[in-house]
Length: 372
Ligand SMILES: Nc1ncnc2c1ncn2[C@@H]1O[C@H](COP(=O)(O)OP(=O)(O)O)[C@@H](O)[C@H]1O
Ligand SMILES: N[C@@H](CCC(=O)OP(=O)(O)O)C(=O)O
Image (cartoon, rainbow, N blue to C red; front, side, top):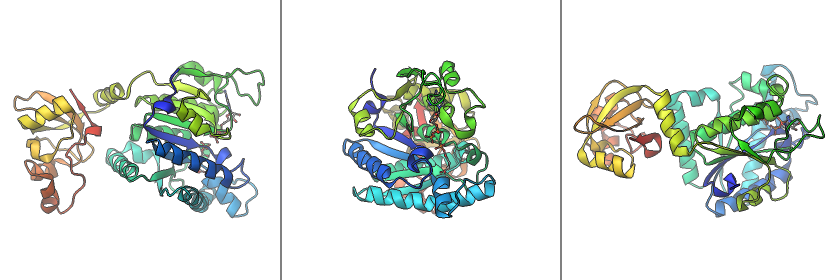
């Protein structure tokens, strides 16, 4: 088996509450320092890393002197707001020891369902990665209620994996990986080394709906793997307390459970564009742009566009057609149709002068486009 972490250039790592807060005893600064050191090493090897970290509520309860996790959602939200400060402070310090900057990114599932916000989040995260910053991502607990009750950052990890088309999702937890049944209750459960992400048998092993969903547990991890596979990413579930866990995985050691994605990233992207999206408009592109899109899969710049048809907003899916009306590519527009009409045929450097702002230099970025 080829390790998905070994081959991944872009990696999302999710660390669960139990690990981050030492089973609720307050932030485990030693563990944070270890992960930061290992992530620094991964970055030296050329990998881009995003960290999805839970622990805000547990840390908030600790800071507020609450011995028990409250039940009321507004108290949980208050605890998360207090604890998130501690979480960020701790990560900033831990990564600072290695000269690495961190950024706090708080997201909700709804942010990622809305196409404009999706594009904004994607661009921001891509910019942070290009700057060498490690984004520290958590749920925006102050404004969500369902997720806070279910404690489900596994799903958020998968959504972020889809969002930035990471090659792999690594879920660090308090078990070695997935067993055929909960090892706390079934000591004879067998370890699952590898399986295909999305295999329904995995959901049975993880406890089935109802029994473990309240605490997240393994079910949300198995479902997260299924979701990550939609953008072609494989998932590894491994123990965050294991010594050198990140470096060993990056070296290709087969530790943890690997849930391999059945499709490649490009096939998944094409499928997604084909399945889910209705075309909101058409951009006619000149011969040079058509060739660049077809042959090199480049981004589409406004200068190559000769005509804009339809009414669309930033984030809508549009077709790119050549002079003869043949579709060359389709993708998510960075500008709405009104703006696109104003900036078509113009060089990128003119965009700001024409519109008064620059959202992005491309009309469609190549990461958001499939050539046909
Ligand atoms: N089939 C299984 N294999 C491994 N762990 C399981 C399984 N089913 C349920 N679990 C439970 O899931 C727990 C991990 O989930 P959770 O406590 O939500 O961790 P985290 O905070 O890392 O998300 C384990 O400690 C284990 O008791
Ligand atoms: N976002 C919240 C809760 C998320 C959570 O606990 O998720 P998980 O670690 O997957 O069980 C927090 O930071 O406390």
